[in-house]
Structure formats: C-alpha cells, structure tokens
Image 1 (cartoon, rainbow, N blue to C red):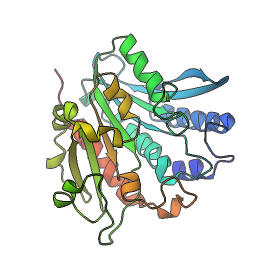
Image 2 (image 1 turned 90 degrees about the vertical axis):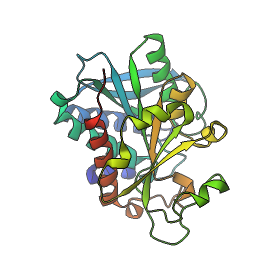
Image 3 (image 1 turned 90 degrees about the horizontal axis):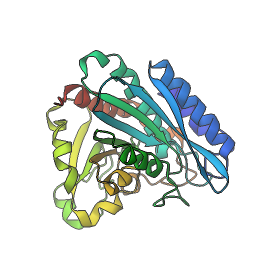
Image 4 (image 1 turned 180 degrees about the vertical axis):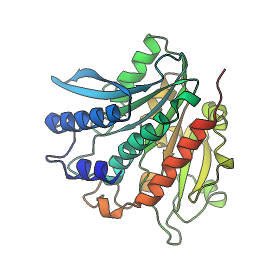
Length: 281
C-alpha cells in the first residue's frame, strides 16, 4: 500500500478536476495495479465541461451474475496532497482486490472494484460525479447488484482523549470518544446489507464500529455511496470518519506521514474477511 500512497500524494500537479493529465496518470496507474491483481480492467470514460474523465473498473469473477461493488475515489480537493482523502482508500482498494483475487474460487459472486473520479468539489452532489455516472449505468443496464462497499478515508487514527467527534450529540453517549477505530456506516435502508457481512464477529487488532444512521443524517456522510443510495442500491461506507476525526481534512497537511499504514491494513483485512464469508443465493 505504501507505493500507492507515495505515487498518489507526490503526483504533480495535484490530482484535481483542473488537472486532467494528472487524473489520467492516476487512472492508468490504478488500471495497471488492478490488472496485476488478475482483474479484467476497463475505463468508463465520460465528458464534463469539455474534458474527458475516467472511472477505472476492475472485475473479478465476471461469469457470476450477482455483483458486489467495492470502490473509492481518487481525485483530491483543491491542491492538497490528499493522503487520507483519498489516497488511503485507493491503496486499500488495490490491496482488497489483491487479497480477494487470491480466493476468487471461493466466491460465488462477481466483484467490481471501482476507482471513481470527480467526487470532490465542484462536482460533488452533481450528476458529473464519477460514481453518479457509474451508478446510472448500473441502473440503466439492470445489473444485479448485491450492494456497494465504499472506502472513504481509512488512514487516520488517534489515541488522544476526545479525538473523535460526531454529527449528532446523541451518538456521543453510544460510540467511543477516542478516534482509534474504523467506522462502518449504513443508512436505515442498507442495514440488512450491513448485517450480511457480520463485521461484529470478526477478530481483528483494529476495532470496528457499525453505525446505522437515521435518514435525516444520511447526507452528512459525504462520499460516493450517496449515489448508490440515491438510485436505490444498498451501500455502506468504511471510514475513519473524515473531518469528524482528521484535523487535516481538505488541507495541505493531509500528508503521508499522518497516516497509520498498519491500521489501514487491519481495516482492509476486516473488509476482506467479511466479503469472503458472505453467501449469496
């Protein structure tokens, strides 16, 4: 994962919507890394304001009808390095693909690993988001989707008291005040999809916390899974909770040295074990 983190955080100019060449370099890098995992990889190209942008889609077990989506975005906000947001997710996505590819014969479903572009402003919450384009395609083609797992910032952890904040004060009495865990977040509609993975029974050195948000808080979980919810698909987000924990969110200080790569690997291991153990009919 370190090689991916270094590549993404050191690329110049930064991988934002203004720098299509940098985004292309990142897309090609992800394409090659997913290909090396044994996946069948394609680009999903689309045009926004006269520029061509690309989602990267790597498929495992293409012969299976039902499809699980695992994704994360690779662009950054402004001119930031974007180590946690969202190089950590892309590094995790590639590592997840590598580990699940090794046990593909044990899985009775297809997995599409998707690296989305244009998640960040100014296109966030618009039809120009890479995830919106991708989900619209799934809906139009009537793809049989089990659901989606979205990696959104998985690299920042703290052992300091009161390092974890929450968007709703009632949550403070339920969940830890120290930001040293990975959160797995669903909306109410996706709660049964969350239960499918049985995260609570996975033994790992990193604590995982399941959160089912009431509908009125759903839009506060700002990332690509929102488009899956919008189109009626089940989705969950795997996250270190972004600005609720990481003081470097959308800042120049979101650098590689602030990440805990060991805990990132633990977060990936949790997802891999959960996916490996689900059964679909």
